[in-house]
Length: 267
Image 1 (cartoon, rainbow, N blue to C red):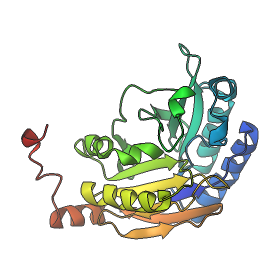
Image 2 (image 1 turned 30 degrees about the vertical axis):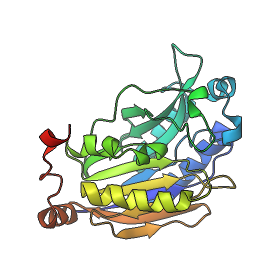
Image 3 (image 1 turned 90 degrees about the horizontal axis):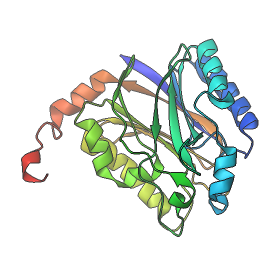
């Protein structure tokens, strides 16, 4: 069974209403193309430059899970009849900060689940933890009409344990919303790590990156053997690829590496 997936590689403004309008338009286009799931970048709701990573600004821009941004995505998902995944800033009730959260909405517009980023980007001179509250649990794989889905966010690509935790629980494809900031060697790391996560877990990798002056773009959709099925440029675009559970089974038949792990030796 093949399913067309769309990665919405887009640039966010600092205004949630503007970004919601862009998302609604992209959802309509993707649905008309026949996509069944669309993925938006990390913190697409309000994307802002890393230089503005201040707790008070993040908190002020945040919304609850039942706020206008998620409600708008819900209505668009329901009208178009496709699944929608997007990054947002979620208000943290017991903290002066906000969560870097990814929401998952089904084709009926229901909020199926959400994930709060657990590994914050305190690297390359940035300190995301100054502005964001930290999630306290990894994403639990989710059954969808297209296969079993895993999910992690941007910097978490650098932690193979995050993907492997989910792979051990059965994953056919991973979703990775990102705001991968430009920098020396960053593009090399981006591409190699995405392909590596697909190969070592024999699962699809579906990534959607922010674009603009500070971000890389170059979203990748990679199959379980590490074949790049589609790649974005540096600009805004909708990128499409099919995922196929028969391909997952075929690759795992050739390379059953996840099943061959001897975890008792290295845990």
